[in-house]
Length: 438
Image 1 (spheres, rainbow, N blue to C red):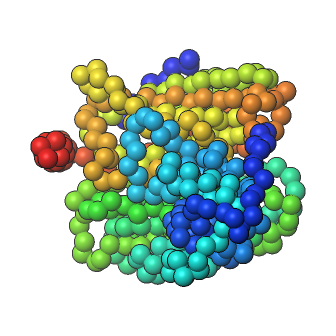
Image 2 (image 1 turned 30 degrees about the vertical axis):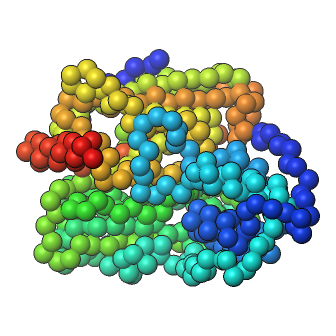
Image 3 (image 1 turned 180 degrees about the horizontal axis):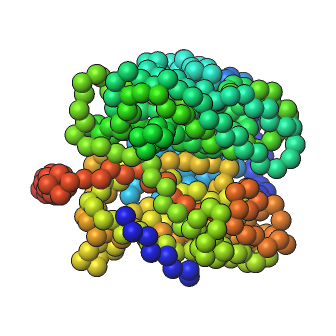
């Protein structure tokens, strides 16, 4: 893959005074709102979730209805920052609310937030504790667990990093990874771990595999059907890169676990992947001309453009932009060898507080022929219009702290052989033709 580089405060919303529940009409919590909360909210907003309050029962929800209406109507919650008007819109992990669901919640609050008949409630979900593996319900317990050494996160201050290296005796035979999960400790670790990465490295054999990557809003990744990521047998080092951010409370001896699920022994995947691949937009992390290009003036804006040329056919699984507090948006566009262009995905409401991986449904995973250019545009807003800007009076330079800036995209991709690419492309064309013929 060749790289080509070219430079180029929350607003208060008035909420109508709540009507008396006895006189309310329209949607009710039991029949209409509770199912929405189950699908899109309760994974975080339940007793052991990372949300600040539980939204399971009516009594738990009722004190928060004004805030719920505001966050839902402005699409702040649930967090889903993809532009809904352009690019691919079919995602495996889409928990955003539809226009109809937003309308239901708004009308419910405006009608006085009536409870309705409890007999209309959907069966409750037995949410696993946040201390459990999220993938356990799908895959069972992990086949391999590696843990970081303890680190104490101070109560106050700026970003903190912990990069321990763990000696690992290894696995007895080569295995193919099916899934991996990054699990901070509960209850305090999940609050202070902003993002991190874990790699297994065998220096003598020059073998490195990225076991897992995590950001707030993204703990696990499951590879597509027929795709695997290889772990070699033998002794190795497990290298953690953990980015902590203090939350006003000391977190003693935090330990992060990484779980790995393997395909069955003897399994041979149809395709081999590296998983999420980091495509840098701002250049190197420490030096080089591209890093020095990232300079945002006080009360100013910046756009960076970066292009990658695919030297082999690829299939894309997912897209995850990464910037810091002044980041406002990032798009990913394909420029095909024949010159045609396609905007694949645009995160136009980027929020550094969340690091969401947008996982494409199988039938829309982009297939890119050799020679395709992946073009990224990163946008920064260092003005008072940016609600999480810590200080618009500052010049902002490249750096690893949240108050500095950087820009790269984590793109899940699998490299394909030409024959495999042609076969997948033909399947995709046949399916499209069949759908058009209906």
